[in-house]
Length: 459
Ligand code: ARG
Image 1 (cartoon, protein in one colour):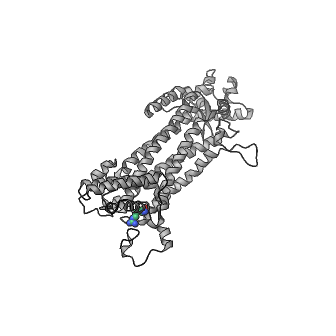
Image 2 (cartoon, rainbow, N blue to C red):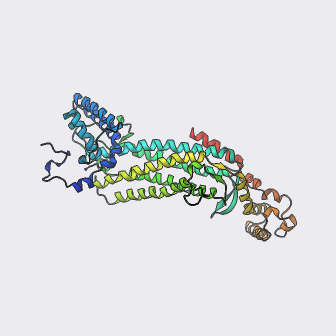
Image 3 (tube, rainbow, N blue to C red):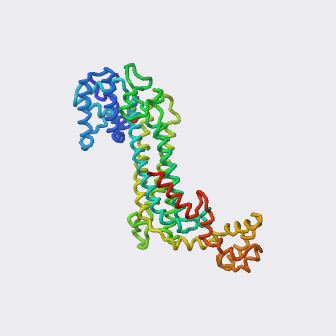
């Protein structure tokens, strides 16, 4: 008698309902359906080419899978938890449609190498999409930065005013982070893009398969070299999630800054209304919900990384059912990151900049104190003495409630006789920026060049 689920032939009693529900994954792994079909087609083509199944079987399988694909895309496919997972659901339907050929599809294959293949196909596709989205965000950053190489804001350390910088320079820091994020994803893709099929349950298969053929049909760079490793390890998914967690972490930092900058105490930027919400009780409120949620969702993606690492850590070789738990964290990571990048690019494009607020903040925090110290050093004072002289000048200015540039020459000379008229050039914000004139520095011409290099690198 043919068993209903494809594997219970030797069982003396049916699986308990509760267990069926507990072990079924079709509720979430149906997301892999189109990749499962893609993998099955390549497997069947390989089987036919190696004379393991007949040409007629291949034709029937192709016809059946094409119909199933249409049903899935049209939302008409009836997923059933009775058939546990996406693989068995599709195979059952195929057999119903084309008969014995459907039952032959699983020759030389196990769900263990099948699911590993599906997840890799899914992830490769996701990575390619994500790389496109990162690029869109990078372009949005460049577009925002370009007109602001001469817009001066305070640069912070410890969130205290440190030195004046150009707003474009600040934005380009995030461009660099995203550039590394994309590099990491491209590198991760190389390890994702290897074919498990042919490994079967764990030891390989006794059929005369041509794994390289299936690999080529599926666009993989090659086959996984060890069958045990191929069916069991999910390091590629963990690695991807680590890349995703870093991207989210970068965007979380950026979000924190956007939230600060749009606070009226800063007033550096405005975020377009369509990215904010109001309060149901406080009519004056405009809340930066999107950046706040990005910050919050970073916790969720970091959690998925820990979940996947923990999932793997105690598993003996080879495949264990634990691995079924890889999917939800992985899918949610991809979805969260995809939505976040998409919304972010749009939000950055809608930012309104307030250069006056940035400038007046930069003027308030003695941001050019280091420039004054460097000025004294260039006139021969040892740096530590210069540091002390400027510290006293800052204390003096604080008492007076003025800026360093508001102190007269005669008064400045109390702190060092080396100070003369030309000091006001270095005390100016523009002078401070222009003096950091080297690659990676905040001088406007350097930032302009950095933006140009960045644009070239993207095309
Ligand atoms: N649904 C399973 C998973 O996601 C497919 C592989 C099942 N293999 C097995 N030997 N039970 O991992």
